[in-house]
Image (cartoon, rainbow, N blue to C red; front, side):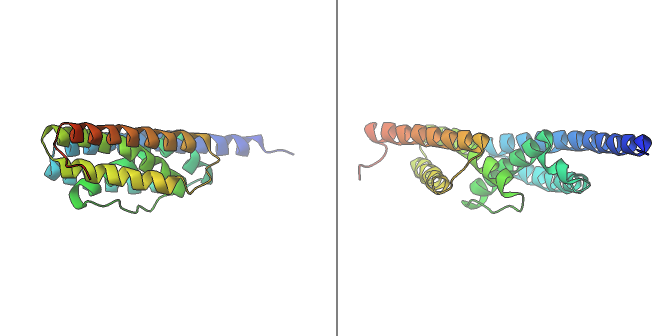
Length: 190
């Protein structure tokens, strides 16, 4: 005989864990946005505090996600982790000048990495306004490198392909910004 009561309990337990995952995902998402905002304002001490906090929240999120293999592909979890990746990559780039490796699923890392150029572009525009042309050039070169590496993949997932296309458009904006700086005489022609 089919034990419908057992099946119902399994579904109920998954739904409860999923709700917990969604709540914790919101916490990680909120902290990600706060980190990015702090870095944009060059409030690196505040960003550092937020990074420590997000690391604790992400560990808790990961703990929840390990209860069931399906959790890693829940929309709220996926978005929270890719935003986490974007925030940490942006923080590390501004602080250390590098793109870090982060231990998450490859798909989540790529999605977060593809969002990074948007934040870097905002930083480049701000840096150009402050006359920090070398920073603009470094950002352009970094986004160019990210895009070049993404072209080596054969992405079949539509979401990733769209995000890689967005990297291309961010690179184009940065190239236009560098051209504008050259035309205004702020960058020497090479």
